[in-house]
Length: 454
Image (cartoon, rainbow, N blue to C red):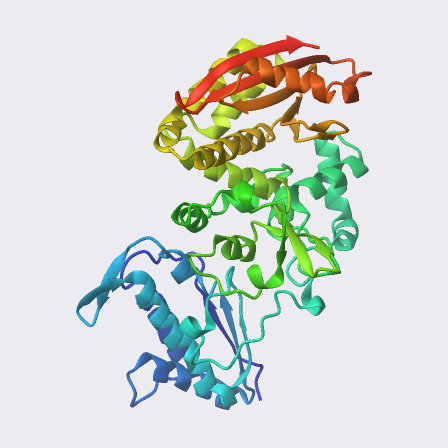
């Protein structure tokens, strides 16, 4: 008896937006396994050939085979809501439907070859409807929220501090920080995932390992692939990310529900761009938000790139803004804000409904505030008198900013004073500047900008 045979299918790395690419990928795998285990002398159909491979692997090794499938849903995510088509039986068909049929046929083979298989594990970022993908497959056990596996695919704080102790010390030395300061930054940047009610903190292993290898705290995971399908879905459903994050949901709305293009919340959560941040045991509801800075910054940058079309890249804009605020140059800050907002003027001009206009206003300034958070300390702070729209803390200056829609910059400035927003900074040595900004929906840009030193 030889060792157990492992059949590994990895859909990662492929580009499936062209007709025939998925079939070629599967064909290549099957031919490789046939060279290793033997080829069915009779059947030519792909499913039967693969079932024969499983049978031969079982017989020749003396043990039932293990099948591992990575990124099982990537062939669907690459084409969902794109309109790409291919030929199916000579008829032009959505590539999404063609791929769904191919994957359904592939996964149904596991039921046919059940007696030859010891274990089958599929990983992916979404839970597509089992009727459309797994209807021919024995019911898979979804372990994504199983408390036994909460830390299966990540690194806990205990593992980080023991296994990677020397790596943390090397990074701390390179950054010129203390050990505790470095751990704090790692938590802020890469920690924050939760996969169950126990709220066990999980670090992103891909980002942590790249951080230690490069001795840099960059957005490694997000840089590995922009979630273009999620951006498409948000646009398709006319959903704004600020209306989805920071809210409590029943599990059926994002965990149990099978992903489709009409439910962006489900796919954003299941893709890892939102995670559980709190659990209300009495109501059995979960608070969803961005897991950490890496994901928040990357996702907001991707959204802003499409939203503020015609302007410079969001990252370049933020660098320019940060420079102006670091230097106390409010005039330059006004010009940069006006320039950015001019790129979305047409959106406001198309919105005749006041509610929709208010919605776009909130979304626009939500993206701006979050973008400013890339390089500055930004908080939407609560005070005893109310909430502050935006606080930007720089080395020599603290800016308290209030936004108004179709009002006046003077009214925005007065609101800062009435709320007592300066009180938390009474003993701060930095110069405190309040800025009232009014946005005109008719003009689609800033119509009033008033700074005042407090």
